[in-house]
Length: 134
Image (tube, rainbow, N blue to C red; front, top):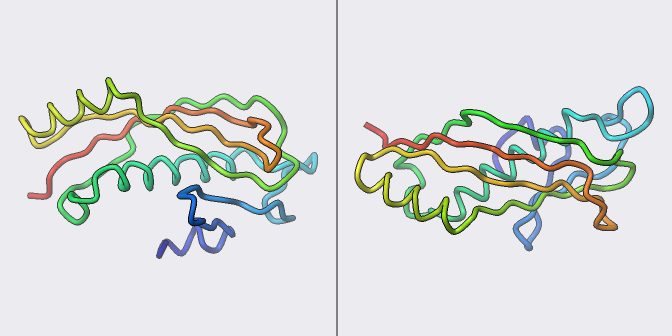
């Protein structure tokens, strides 16, 4: 991954393309569940990696910036967690069309954070502003 912060937090990318975070003491909040900020970190990072995987031809040629996010916590995380990202076909088409015309565009990435037993602990929408390097 080559991002020291997330490596230090224990985040790992597996062959399935998902990012994982093992349940451990340094991620817990005052009630013994995975801290909301740790779940957010996992989800936001997964959204960026997913965006990168969708457009490998642009790596090194663009600047992606997280513009906004909205998250909802649905269940306390008490096990290992991982993040799954998706982009709607409509959002993808709009992004590609705008980016090719203007050299910049916005795209939303949806992310679910799940425990190892598939319980969804958080959902989020991450809106990225992407522009060509000048």
